[in-house]
Image 1 (cartoon, rainbow, N blue to C red):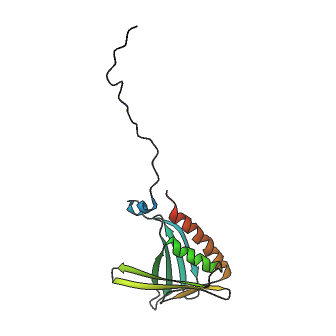
Image 2 (cartoon, rainbow, N blue to C red):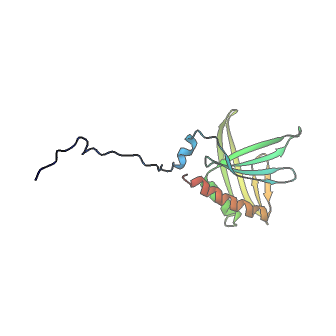
Image 3 (cartoon, rainbow, N blue to C red):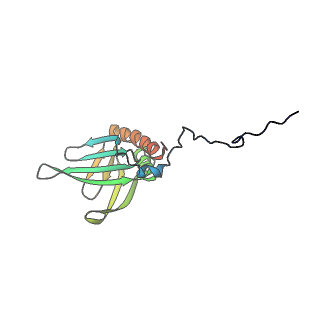
Length: 160
């Protein structure tokens, strides 16, 4: 019986990279070079104010309070919420809590600013308030916001 002479490279293992990519972690979303897209947006208008809710492709959720100025323009107060804060807001919307409040500090172009946000129930209304403006939501608007915030929490925690 003759033994075959080993050929060169018989013992070399070649690893071919898989075509599958692992999902980026949620914290990696802010490092992407892709443009930020709006994934969810809803505005609740009043006679003299508006409350906007926005979720973007970075998994960030913002509330914006708007009110008209004398120059027929709108002033805006923008606050970013995390998923736990949205959970607290959901508890108020669902009637499991009467109120919630949050402090937010933001380093902007005009320096450091602090904003307090209040969410409270009274009668059939739920009021969202910052120092400059408040917006009360009807029962139907509360239900729409509740569903949107549930989706926002899921979107904020997805690894896509």
